Length: 201
Length: 201
Image (tube, rainbow over all chains, first blue to last red; front, side, top):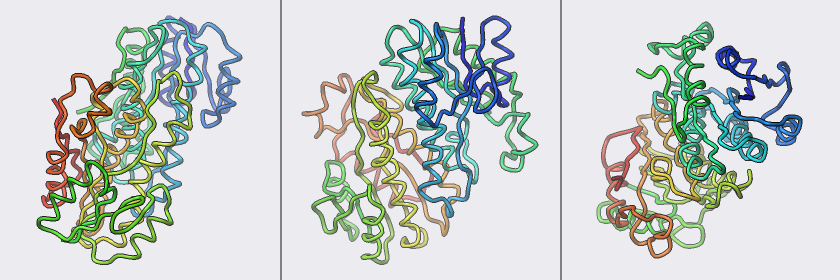
């Protein structure tokens, strides 16, 4: 398969690339690094990325930003950061990518645990994760040409715990390599409309 | 209690008003009708509504729009309609309403069944409902002054089936009066961070 991993230079993305490159042709898309550059908050950048490629079997997104902050200090724009980046950035990868992906291809998005197991400062992440999971479950009903769509909802990643541990006390982290297996299942398996909850207690 | 029902002129809202007015002072806010007018897509309109009131114990939102359409025809702006109206409209009722609501007051938002039980044309509704439910679960951790927050996720409403039945084949509808009981539980009960799934099979 020919697989593009958008955010393939990040913590989870690198592990996904490592896992899948053993068996497939993997193209790494990053904001600054990687085989190809893309800014998922910019539709023209997404279009340009797809136009430069052909014969894509799978699109994986492991990217997107949200603002973490105290609820009492969150402004509307703080929520829109996540809605525009992690949510609509990933959705636009699908809307704009559909004409370019092969029959029976797949899209795999990344949400996260915080809408199920919330933490202080995480209301925007919870909002965006819930939106992604809801979209995926519904969009799977309407994907054309046997194209599949799933989301991966990982708990906190071990390699990120040096920064995130104070916010995720008591959470059991998983390695990025463990998380990467869920992306493998989504791409190399046959299921659609799934939210793969990885490392949930 | 003094309760404001935003969208209190709509199908669910009218039933909520009827249920709660038996025991409480209820103010009906509507886009055009009601005791007071508000446009939840306009922050200034929300601010003006709150400034005109005092001593609010509960804010209920039963309003907000999403675009229903075929996934293959959905554009980014079609998703933003729901994100701006049903999602951020309701969220802004909280962000802007917090200074005005009494200690131990409550916010009750409306999501819906479609992120759990999806239908064709419903990918935007599923996205928005998931976002609301995720936000509510997380925001409950950080609400100040013992203020509570819940969302009501009803199945399709019987009174709307003359229009919606073709899209909800096989769904068991519930009356707006049944749905209204969940709003009563949210406002008159003590729970917080709950997604009340009403009429799910």
